[in-house]
Length: 294
Image 1 (cartoon, helix red, strand yellow):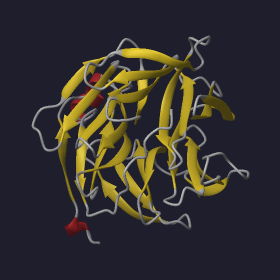
Image 2 (cartoon, helix red, strand yellow):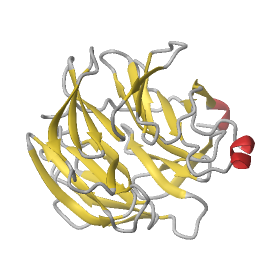
Image 3 (cartoon, one colour):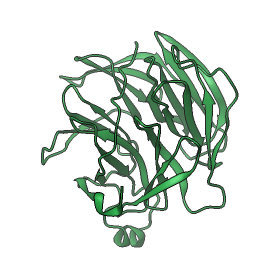
């Protein structure tokens, strides 16, 4: 693949304060993502020109498909079931509901149907968050003392999980049970971004086992081989990119969210695409997001 094989264009021109958590439902050809700080869920079907914005009563960051009628949303105080047709929300399971200082952040569904979901301090307080595992009504804490959980994704066979604490800037890898998504070993360093430009943010793993990671502050999406080598860097026309996901009937395209949160008025003027969502055409071999096992 050469640079000539790749094109990057705007997918949605709605400027999210903190765009995050993109996912794609192949059954309906619909992409979903959040504006966490803007308290909204965004929806775009196929190549439709318009993006639908659904206001939310809370900050939320991740969405998983349960079935044709229901979704699970990870919000600042719990896991909520959302009726896809009406948008009606009902609390399914509290998550740090007794801690008003935290909110949910990065999350993704393991091939077993288990959700890994992270939490963090609303003001980025050091060590205020954690990474949790949820499946079939059971919630467990996997890792605590996390500042900014990100890059949660899984290998195609479900035997490896990846994650990072952006405040630490080391991409980690851990062996997991392919049938449950629970860790079976201790996390080990996969890629060290400390001292480099930008912070490791959201990620997704393709069918070839490549990890695609958005690099906050650097305006790029990077690809890593399964041995931990950065093998590709794709420039995006905004600095604060946050998370990629595969879209399209063939899952051979990628959208990338971004944010304008934290930028001064002058910085926003110099970065007019901040917060918008981008489409990368690169013939990637993507994978569908698994459904959540409620």
